[in-house]
Image 1 (cartoon, helix red, strand yellow):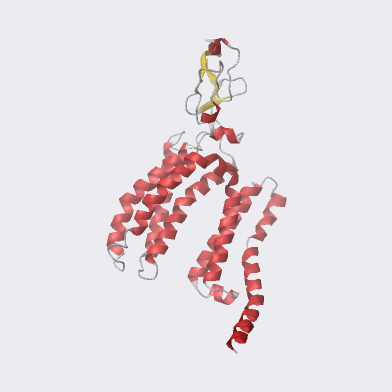
Image 2 (cartoon, rainbow, N blue to C red):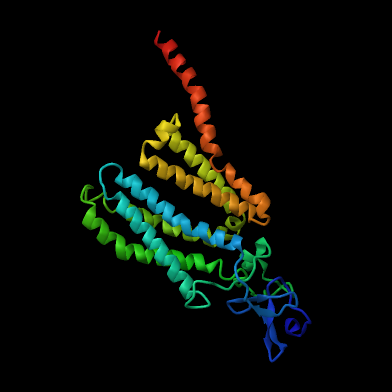
Length: 307
């Protein structure tokens, strides 16, 4: 009762409903799509996501697509010519799922969404900030303070899984004749493992990923590019551009580099941030330059050991 009669609600996320221009009722959780303002009144989320929010959603949307492509390539290898079509199908699945997710999110029927701005890390973990005004009873005010950045990813993953189960088995059965019966569905089985992992990752670490994803993109793209170029024994630009597959991998990593740089800079000041994109080819140039210098020494060492 003391909570209901107090002038302001305790905790960070407890609030009262606004009825006929006045705050009424006891302090509690705000309805979905609302969050408390500075006066502890539940207020409807009416803002549009910032560029950084869209970049975060794009990163989370890319994760299942990249994993699809990885496992399709891993299990197809050189034994089947169906990998390319499976890649295209995976992109179609994720694209359609993304569009459907935006359409069913408020405002329903449009590709835009309304949201609450992320103010601090605790906004992602409101369940950890339920207050105890009398130190005995807990006032439960768990809500989606970052609406809809938390749940929209989970909805998207659900649609991706449904679309995959509807499209991919029929496609693989028709075109993956170069693979054995036990191998042709392995990329689908892999997705049945990584989708629950991605769901738990979003549910537990969504807030941490929101702040760290630009640096994760840069680090992973640099590491994977270096590993790929090393495994492919790329020592010069000529060996890099002679195969279309290598060019596709290279430009994909360059796009990821640019995505990470834009996410970090947020393009707040275009005249200073846009020149940073010139750094995108830097890791590739550095690797090829160092490879040219290390190759002669490697040949000499092998020749010396032969004698």
